[in-house]
Image 1 (cartoon, rainbow, N blue to C red):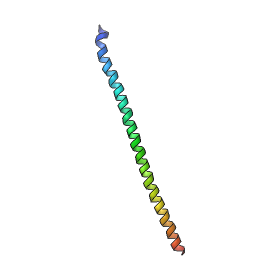
Image 2 (image 1 turned 120 degrees about the horizontal axis):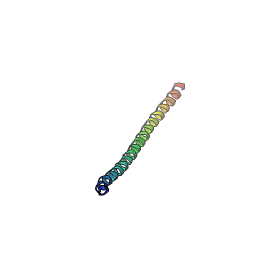
Image 3 (image 1 turned 180 degrees about the horizontal axis):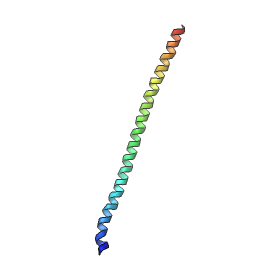
Image 4 (image 1 turned 180 degrees about the vertical axis):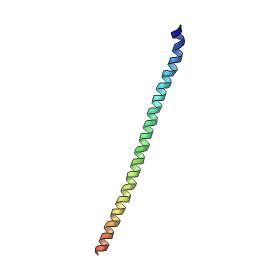
Length: 66
């Protein structure tokens, strides 16, 4: 009888924990995707800045030589 009364209390807890775990996994994957996108955008912006800087430097050195 005690097990019968105790079971309904345990079952929602298990489902709640599994839901929490899945939501945590979802949040973690979303955070990972966001961080990857942020890193990619940072890398592209840094690459454009670097390429522009190098082009400017090359043009500057060429004009300086001429």
